[in-house]
Image (cartoon, rainbow, N blue to C red):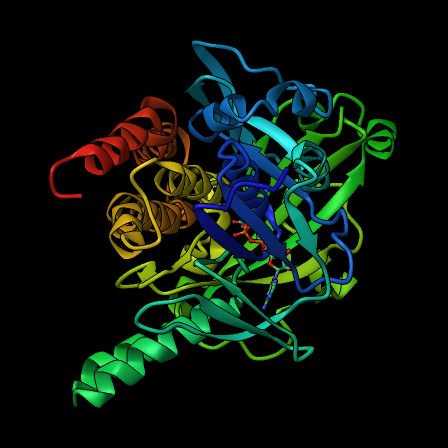
Length: 436
Ligand SMILES: Cc1cc2nc3c(=O)[nH]c(=O)nc-3n(C[C@H](O)[C@H](O)[C@H](O)COP(=O)(O)OP(=O)(O)OC[C@H]3O[C@@H](n4cnc5c(N)ncnc54)[C@H](O)[C@@H]3O)c2cc1C
């Protein structure tokens, strides 16, 4: 018996967290063909720790991933109020905890490699993952399929191209170049220049020093250290993989250098003595040679959609990691995009309109998280409202720190006080409304 023709052919460029989640969410719709392309020779199980807040965790539950993911972590989802992070003032030898972040629902901490493994295990065989396929560019015409061109010279066609290819996205580069050329053709020079300025990522002014500390080593040198059981900020550290590893990230922020060009490699080994010097006056920790990582972001885009091409995850809105929400936002993008593409009213003919619904829902939401994450970076590095925390001590310092933690919670609480259900309902309302 011949297979029924597919309603849509979706090409996903990038099999990271966003791309794999989208492929899995789309696999619920048998009339959609999904093909994944990734630049890597194999989908290596790489990365460090990521935290998933209750809002994106709901999507993980809906996709049937919860049971398998929970086998990889000791954190269990609890409803109601639970402690998520202890915040310590650690930029001194004798640090102290000044508040505990309490979330409504658990922040689940995972190893990124475990997450990717579980996503891959759940992908049906019908969804092909093509490795060593680095997208170079694409051509999209008024109608008909979009042509993808890969670095190895091969080509393929699809109805919808999804750029899930991360911070340095080639899809974004081709997408914005096309938009900028269009503006230039209409002599709209300023808009063209503004669009072109979003192609390359910009430095956030922050360097992250990332390491995985073997849990046993920390237990031996610092028995009872709080990060063996509970996350701590900023240095941020939390246990993953059942405490076998402690995910450690220390941040050095130069907010005055935000949106500048970073000189030198964005990632590489750190200089041990330089790293030790940077944190010499801090509470002693147990890290030797972390990986040095210049955190880059993507400037806010006017749209995540151009015709039948759409950007998701870091390709669309790479943000600082200060809200622990980049992957969570990629997961939300993926689920809402699958809801839009999977809807029975979405066809090849109305794809641009359907994708605009995705843009209308996801762009303002993700852009707000980018800004909230930026603000968290200020709070965590005690750079807010021009207050010089070093000038205060005793009860005065305590008051300032309590005000700071109040502002931080307010800036962050959307992730446990709001639900993704609202976005799903909005998408369905628009797809089923008279204007679609
Ligand atoms: C220090 C740090 C801590 C973080 N902590 C958290 C956290 O606690 N919680 C959280 O939610 N987020 C966190 N994040 C952010 C999170 O890691 C990212 O937002 C998330 O991984 C983005 O997923 P993605 O699928 O969009 O991109 P990626 O995971 O980067 O995947 C992109 C994929 O595209 C492929 N690719 C690249 N170019 C091409 C091309 N031209 N053609 C084809 N394929 C291509 C790559 O090989 C890769 O597989 C953190 C980030 C950092 C730096």
